[in-house]
Image (cartoon, rainbow, N blue to C red):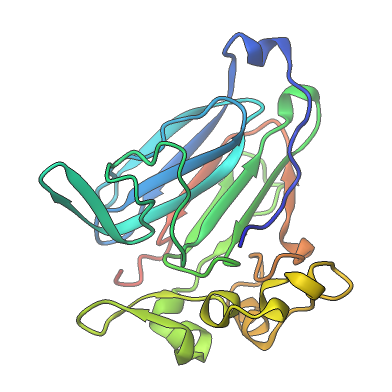
Length: 246
C-alpha cells in the first residue's frame, strides 16, 4: 500500500534543461552495509540503487521538481550476476532498482520538492508498508523546519510489542515489521474497498501502537499529521540514527 502525497504539477524551464537545486545526503549509521534505493514518481529519475558501507554517506543531486521515495535494503547478496536482498529487495536482480519499488515491509522516506516554484517541499517518513530500519530526516540549516523520522528500532521491540507482525530471518532474528494491512489483508486495515476514504478508514490498533513508537511517521494512509513542509534547503537522511546495534 502506498501513501499518497502532494506532487508538483508544473514544470519549470530550469528543470527542463536539467537544473539541479536540492541535495539529498544519505548516511548509513548502521553497523552493517545497506543498499539505498530510490523510486521516482515525478521528474527525471535519479540513481536507483547503490551500496553504502557503515558510516559512509553519499549525496544525490536531485532535480528541483523531483518527487519520489527512498528506502534502504540490507542483508544483500550477489549470486553470480544476480543481486538480491532479504530486506527491502526490489526484485530487479541488480543493485539498481531501475524504477521498481521495494518489497514490504520497508521504511519509506518520501519527498515532493517544489522549491523552484517558490512553494514548499513536502517530506515524510512512512511505515504504512511496514518497517525494516529506523531513519531520520534533517533539513540542513533550517532550524524552523521539523526534524522527522522513525528513530526507534521496532525490530528490537517486538514490532511495537506486537509479535504477530514480526518478520524473521532463517535464524529467527527479527529483520522487519509488517503493517496490519500486510499481515492480514483486510480492507479496514488497508484503507481499501468500503474503507477507502478518510471518513471510513481510521487508525487500527496496530497503527496506533506504531504511532506511539514513531509519532512523526505515517502509520496509516490518512495519517496527515505526518506530512511536513520546508523550503529552499537540502536534506540529510540517516539510517540507524542511533545505531542501536543494527
